[in-house]
Image 1 (tube, helix red, strand yellow):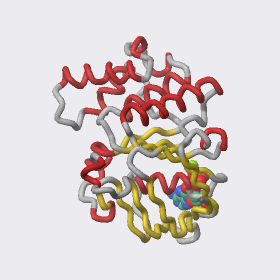
Image 2 (tube, rainbow, N blue to C red; image 1 turned 90 degrees about the vertical axis):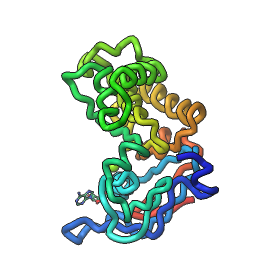
Image 3 (tube, rainbow, N blue to C red; image 1 turned 135 degrees about the vertical axis):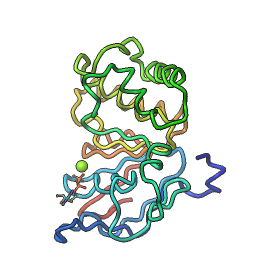
Image 4 (cartoon, rainbow, N blue to C red; image 1 turned 90 degrees about the horizontal axis):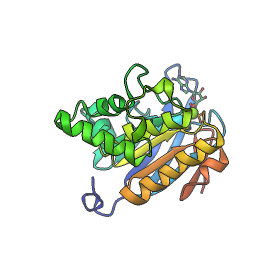
Length: 228
Ligand SMILES: Nc1ncnc2c1ncn2[C@@H]1O[C@H](COP(=O)(O)OP(=O)(O)O)[C@@H](O)[C@H]1O
Ligand SMILES: [Mg+2]
């Protein structure tokens, strides 16, 4: 998805999105209008329970809204036929807990993200090594995740998220379980991704200092965007 294909439109656009969870009691999102430009790095912040993860999950098509519309790149998510394909092609995901497979090497963890793609095996390996180099841990390619520090694991998770060259990277509390020096490293990596690759980044964090590294900070409260 290039800027040209978007025809000047934002990369992400939501209109009046609500999410009421199945028991009908929790209105997790209550009319969210959000717009993110291509190549923008935005953070979404607000207290625990305000709906940040819910919103990110909807943007990544991990769940569907109760009402409203969401467009990511050229995809109208309400008309999505194949959510897996959308996620594989357009979206990179990074979570607080990296969800790496502990018994596979670092290299394999990145390679398997490309299993559904058309790339031949040798190219998947080459690309995975290149990504590990980009995130500064190519020397650890043969280790397994339990043999890494928290910050190193999160770098693997970022490399994996980039494996299919996504146009958007969604990160939910990606620094939530890291010590302060690893936090700085991972945030520096996001900055670099944005400037080197032009990836659009949406970072969710309840931590003001982390959120402040983005170009723009969106504040949420009780399922709504309250500022700016
Ligand atoms: N699967 C779910 N079922 C029911 N309620 C949920 C579910 N996920 C989240 N919630 C509720 O929705 C609200 C928003 O949650 P969440 O989006 O996780 O907030 P945040 O990420 O900002 O902490 C909270 O009240 C939470 O308890
Ligand atoms: Mg959350």
